[in-house]
Length: 101
Image 1 (cartoon, helix red, strand yellow):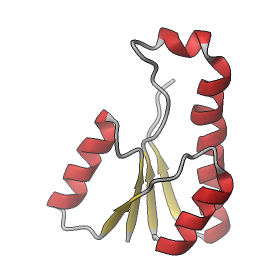
Image 2 (tube, helix red, strand yellow; image 1 turned 90 degrees about the vertical axis):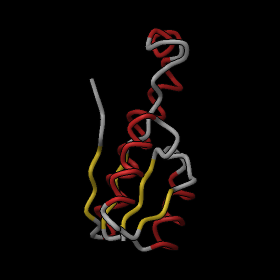
Image 3 (tube, helix red, strand yellow; image 1 turned 180 degrees about the vertical axis):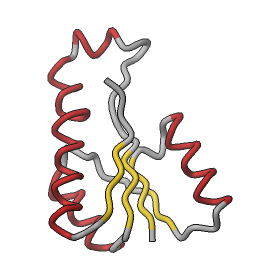
């Protein structure tokens, strides 16, 4: 069973399409990655074997937003990603992070 984190983004939409075409059993996460307790509860509820993390702040209207909102970008793109990776490691779940520099 697969879990996709980041369902609302461009990459998330592509992954939904791939998972659907591939006939994979998957759920779409609703938790914010920086909310460790909520993310842990979702992992424990659905018990995925694979997690695809395509979440993150890209900035609106463009990436320059991240420069003027560094704390928000850091929480999502760094701390949130680390939370998911750590929670998956604790549970023995395969985790793939889709991220750019």
